[in-house]
Image 1 (cartoon, one colour):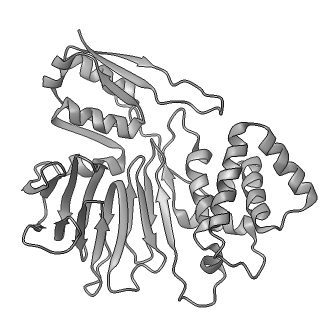
Image 2 (image 1 turned 90 degrees about the vertical axis):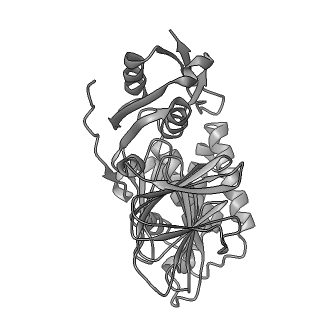
Image 3 (image 1 turned 135 degrees about the horizontal axis):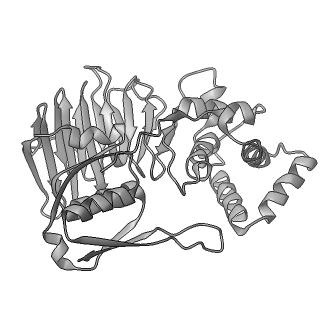
Amino acid sequence: MGVLPASGVIHVNHDKMSMEEEQIYTLIAKNLQGDITDKESVILESWKSESERNKNEFNDLAELWKQSGRLQFPVRIDAVKALSEVHVRGGIIKRKVPQLSWFGQVAAILLLSVLFSGLYTYFFSEGSSHEYYEEVVAAHGTRTSIDLPDGSVVFLNSGSSLRFSSQLGQNKERKVKLKGEGYFKVAKDPGSPFIVDAGKLFVEALGTAFNVNACHPDSQIEVALIEGKVAVHSGSGKKSANDLILSPNELARFNITTNSLLKESLDNPEKYIGWTEGKMIFADDPIRDVIQRLENWYHVEIRVQDQQLLNYRFTGTFVDEPLEEILNAFSLTSPLHYAIKPGIKNDQGEYSKRIIILKHR
């Protein structure tokens, strides 16, 4: 099986955007501030009339802006400068994946950070007493890295998000909220524990490196510790007799259905953190686990047509390879056969997920 060379990563910044995309989102910001000229308004209205999707996007942003009326902007904001600054501070890292609209999936999130996370206090406040929350989302098929205000670094896997305070590190505890999967390299601060809220599981650390997989929060959450020490709490996040303390190369599994929290040895740490380098590693994994990871990474829907396939397990390491290459490899080592139904374009120009049908030969 041939391994495709890694396509590399690029740091997205202001210079990489097309002028048209930059102009439209800047005009939206100026329109919502009431600082748009007649000429600029004509350009914006023309863009809105081009498609129902454009119109809906503007209306959604306008509604969010309306609901955030508590924000005050006593001085004029340089929207272009602000947008550029957010791109730089966002630290978005991605790899190119076919059929992905980078600007629609990533830059829109950065724009929301500009419009609705207290941009004025972020760029123009003279004091540091103002607190607001930012949320960074990794578009499907991409990996994103974030430098947090306290010096910690977080990698987000495809489709995952992280919410954190602008004053992270200035309080007695550093708390972030994770949806999906994230790899954390926590800056040491003995006086301020770092807490990851993964929904029904909480991970507390002082200075360490660990991976939290909450991609399926209704069934199972996993915490893999690479170095340091962490405490894992279920339920409300408060300490109890059922908490687990993890040492390096240990894994905690929280079963949502049975409300059980178990610990086991971590034989292959790279399997849990290899995704940060574009590696997808399977080690005698049941096909259900394989399907979950493929669906999340490639943003597809996989249907098993023949139930006997559920008895198979798979092993393999793939580095930045397209989904078809992985399915081809599995079909060579098992009676698995697959068919792909392409996504369907709707009236707004958006595509539905591709559907993968797995059959038994």
